[in-house]
Length: 511
Image (tube, rainbow, N blue to C red; front, side, top):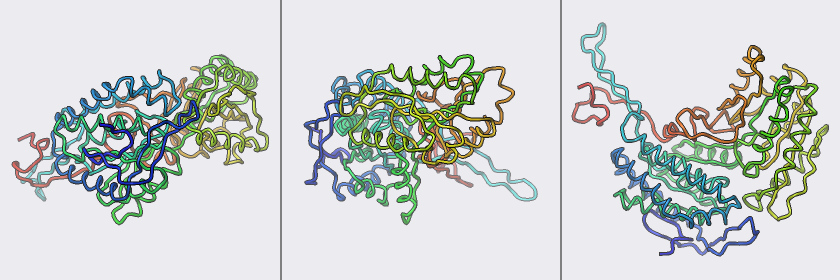
């Protein structure tokens, strides 16, 4: 059966619309051959209603059974083998090594959530038994646990066709919690997304999950996404992408008769602070480290270090020249899509008009249509503070080096920044006594603090916090990476004075 091109409404394939689209291969700048059918509003409603029906059963399926489902998804993705890798490359312009690494991360995430839900510890249940003789008032028996919210809509991301997409962290964590998932496939990698969707649906059938536990919807523009978020059967949304896209979904969800949460991971310029002593001791090493981080994946990471704050010293100019030199050595790479390349060029051109801004790279390596040259610019701290345009994220291999006059100016810059995913400090041990004010300032603006490292590379583990104050994410209390991301899709419920026979199994202990 040819599953490429059609919508998956639960276990059923559907293509009711006359509206179709094709995908661009950014490496060759040509259209791929597959034709994809956009979902109609009727198909959107069918998927949402089916997800609601599935939720009635799926929410009560045991953790070990859901774990088997997640592990089977991982197995089926691996069985796609080279077909998936080739599709990934054709639609993203990313390398085979990147595809293999991202597939491994996707598999790891699925298996991590499977391991998590083998018991109910993740529900953080609390049992407080009755105290009928307590004076002056008796205490009732109270028991609290976490229950799933309901059907979740997940929007696939452009820059991670696997790990933040169809079977990525949002989908894996929602399914683990007991929530059915409807994926709105990203229009830049529909073949990759469709292949993974079929792997998920086959896993659902093989493990006895209810029809509608997963659906896969195709649509460009805003119509399909808007319909999904506004549908009354949908109870939460997961999104990775731009600030404008995430905020639009957040506003839609808030305006519903029944508002629902939107967990959006959005923009970040990930400030890096390099102290004067760090520059003096190792400016060449730091420059090489950050040249690789800035250009990794053509700069198309949400954790790309787009802002470097350097304390003005004798070595500041040496560092800037060395950074430009190291960046210039790295070959230009393909961006994800012609539209993303065009946006990168527009933003980098706009920033060149700022007063006092100097471009320190002169790279003209990009000899293919969607390849991008890295760009390093520098500006004074005073100018940066007075031009909010310089604070915006430029998605691509770009970084702005700000020459900061003193500690007061440094703290003022950090306090003036919007919320960020990460903040980094590059410093020497003898400077530790002077760092607490800087750490406090960064901590107030970011979700993850890094010391003497780079922000690119997000470890998938329980201690990871991938999120931050707005607009880095829509709710800084939650992470989008690691097993604790499951907390986005559940809510607490307390049972008071309940008969033993009617309590959920995970609340029946201490009897």
